[in-house]
Amino acid sequence: MMFFKNLFRKKKSSSIAKKRLQILLVTDRVGCNPYTTEAIKKDLIRVLSKYIDVDREKCSVEICHDSIPYLLANIPIKEVKV
Picture (cartoon, rainbow, N blue to C red):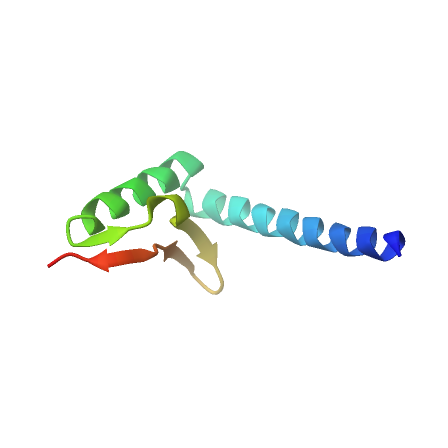
């Protein structure tokens, strides 16, 4: 039984490593290093916080690439400010 659990863990960690490598390659192609991506995230949160209350701990921003590079932002909203 432990063999199967370890087998599934390796797939999970390998898929995570693959995803990280893809992100690294895309950011390299676009010319956007991790520091720039983090600065974009902070700026987005700062601007959006003027209008909505966001969950800062759960925010994520990444640069992805399918046919063209794009910015993917996941910013959970706690509530809209009136």
